[in-house]
Length: 393
Image 1: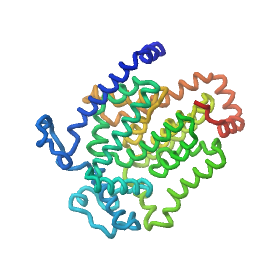
Image 2: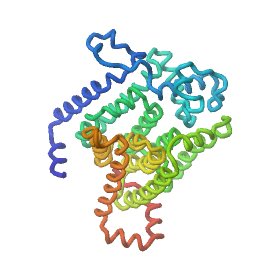
Image 3: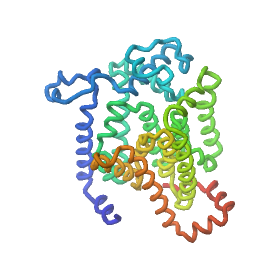
């Protein structure tokens, strides 16, 4: 593995950039059939008219467009949704309760994107598509600065995420991913402002919640700012908006059963404990902590809701060392190569096993004698884990 890594990194920069551009071209080609006819009718484009198209926007787009219109009509109606009727298509696709049941920070971001889209003529769909392009483009640049070959490995098989980003449109995830990528770039530049952006990401979706455990390693001023962002984004809305808490109860009842909940709690808690120990002993820097900090709660959500996307989409965040992105690529490749034998749902256990295996490899690198000694001194070990700062990049 080291020799292959060294060989690939030694390739001329022109070759690296060329292969990344080829990957981007393949991604565009895979994405073209997922653009809805309602947004762009290929019948008007001779070179594309043979491609099949869905007639209407994806379900997430329909949901979040209604949510954005509700906010622009009356922001205080955000969670009651009593002052704006749904269109027939919106009502046939989602109930009002099921439309955009997310925290206010990401809903306000969606409403802003909708307003800009209406003013510029790009529409909400076009603005979300631009976010996807921004995330992928910035990721490509990051990979070119670290391990360039991870970009083609991760994205040449783009069929699933093309469907999620271009057809269905995971709007709120894309908004959060852009914020997280901005935090990652700040961390790479050695800027502690990345903590504030991670707090903003938590208020958008709870996926990065594990990152809160980094609070003791922040400066006092940054820790206060971090907690203030969380309180304003997640607690203050209870005072402002009627029916705010329904979004948490709604998601709790929406998908999955007791077994998924217990599995998510068990695996998520175990992974959190192992990760915390590994990132301390292996001296993870801020870039590592941002990327790995998405996994524990994402794993819990994926198992609880029986929806692999809640974990897979987080594995797209660039990993300068490689494992998380390689795991995503492999988990998606197996059902793509063996569609009749391996269902897509298998991506979740495949990714989970490989993530635990990666932590096991880190434990091996720490040394089992050290691990055992730390296990026998739990108070000392916890104190070390709680106070050890991230290693500078």
